[in-house]
Length: 100
Length: 199
Image (cartoon, rainbow over all chains, first blue to last red; front, side, top):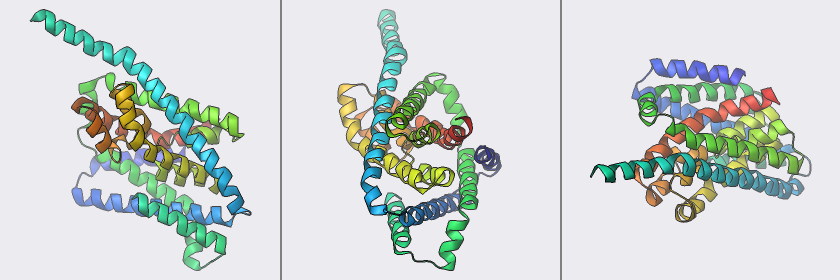
């Protein structure tokens, strides 16, 4: 929950500051923090016992966590857009042709 | 960006495997929670600085939320199924899938909240989502519809995968893609945090 609170404080600060130099500086800090966290994650992962043996199973699990959520996202978005967005487009087109 | 993050991960793994230690390295690994808080503050500032987003959201009305809703529900259910298959706890599984392609943030945050191994899975799986999106978008544009091209891209639909969406769809889908990216990017840290709080 503290992450959400800190992010909301950031949104509030962002609304107050709208200068480009700050935006660029903010992006650089974001990049630096991300790289430090990823680097730290690498150090922790590398320190684990039997790291190289674990690597192959991590790869397969990661593939599952990519594949299933992505396929379900595609199916859900396709169903929702087919039902709610494409119909509206067709209705608009029909109305336009009737007016003509 | 992708190159830098992969390099940071590889150098980190190398340091970990070799057992190399020094003051700077310890300073970084011992203070990851502070780094994460700074990152979250900066992410919030970026969102707050985006101009005209409310106007655009009003312009597209409820229509703009249909695609992010489908992506979030699909990803979340996918995470639940994956945690069932792999015996990874539900809160961790749903958090990994909630990354929606934003591999750097998901990897870094989840590693801090659930450990390096789960963080690595979050990093690799979300990186795969971004990379495979480039190959999936042309196929989806051909077999499904234009709007569905945004689905695999998830949170990356406003930046890295946008050129592919631009190439294979139309102007309206590109605008919806940018808005979808903004909405999903906002929800990535929120959902990850909520997964660990709720389950």
